[in-house]
Image 1 (cartoon, rainbow, N blue to C red):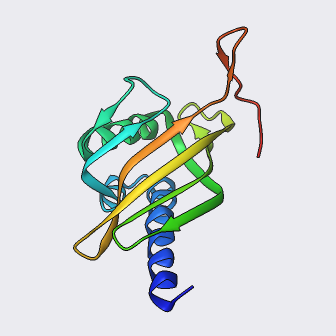
Image 2 (tube, rainbow, N blue to C red):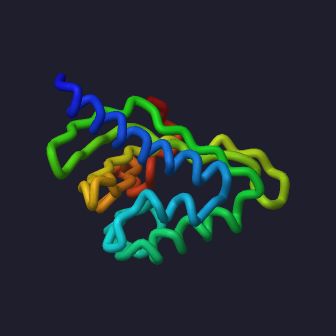
Length: 146
C-alpha cells in the first residue's frame, strides 16, 4: 500500500472514530463533522430512509434522549479506499445506561459506511444498519454477536 493510500485509510478510520467519539460525548456538533450534508441513512429506526445531515442528527438526538450514558463500539471494520470514494463494513453496538438508570448491553448490528472526499475531507455520504431476520417469525435476531 502506498503512503497516500495509507494516509487516506487512516483519515477514513479517524472519521468513523468520530462517530464513536461523538456518540460517547453526546455531541451533535462532532457528529455533524462526520456526515455529508446530503447523507442518506438507512437506520434501524423508521422511516426506511433518512435524508440529509439534519435528519441523521435528529436520529442521534433521539438516542441521546433515551440514554444517560452512551457507548458505541465498531468492530471488525474492513475498508476499501479509493481516490474520491471509500466504503467499509463491520459490526456496531450501541449500549450504555438509559435515562431511567437501566444498564443495557445493546445489540450488535451490521453496519456499512460509504464515504466521499469533499475538499480534502472524508465524509459519510451513506450508511446502513441492519439486523438479521428470522424468516419464519419476521422478527429481528438481536442476540447475535460477531
